[in-house]
Image (tube, rainbow, N blue to C red; front, side):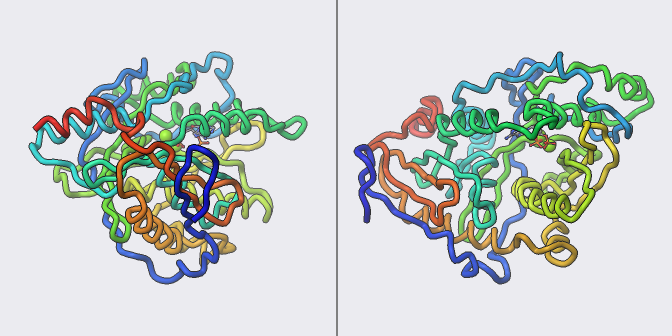
Length: 376
Ligand code: A3P
Ligand code: MG
Ligand code: MG
């Protein structure tokens, strides 16, 4: 037991290394199943419907991803939204089904991605807040830490002549606009597809899927954005959904680039694995942001591809086992009332947790959610 600063009471560490103790065949996993969804519209207003679902239709190669950068409408995400939209969606689900949506862990997909990538991502730290309420642990990102890391990333000087971080982020959104249509393809889509290059890019709209899933003994409810549908949702709600994740990446020209891409695949894989997204479409672009080629990756094949054809820089089963152990441990630690911090500092060999507030749930849980769950 260690003491850390004035606010914290008890500190506990979960050792990341040696990672070899998490090797071997993977712990049990539950296939993610969508239980609810919500959309943010073009003004980023929340709706309990699927209005922001988009469909994949391949983009034209040779497109200039920088086009329209000066008119980019970028969402101001400086406010802390906590878990609000996810909790609203859970309330609605429970109201409609008259059944409590139970889980050991409730969080955004982004938090689980950070945790799962930990054994092979030494460079990025994270800070999260967690609280226990009615047998579930709710985890949110620590907003101050998020803003600080964003600022640090923004201030990172790019190599002379290299595109700015902002421009590269734009390329990702532009690629989405060039690859999406608002409805399933029909002959009238042709006109829309022709006009995609001139659409003003904004990142306000999102479709978010809320899934039930599980790793090891931990049952989870997680919410996260999905980029597109390949065809349409299946009629049978138990069947998996043909989601598509879109990604851009620098064209691979040498072994160093290949290694860099393999490392990037770790996050691509985890992100899609967690929500049950079966396909990832990578738009490779050159240094000037010109779209060169597309590659379709099957999410489930990525770990084997990295092991057998790549350099084996990461191991998917190990990530799963690490997550199963960590969540098990977390469930034993976060027991009473209060707010806990979960922190991994950059390059640190452990994840620390400590209690930050003795009682209550901080701002992790909305008043609306607590009221809903305690009213009867
Ligand atoms: P790329 O992934 O093609 O770079 P997502 O891939 O999760 O759907 O996100 C869409 C785009 O948002 C990304 O496209 C990238 O442009 C931008 N983006 C997402 N997360 C980001 C981050 N942490 N920093 C900068 N840009 C980010
Ligand atoms: Mg996305
Ligand atoms: Mg994407």
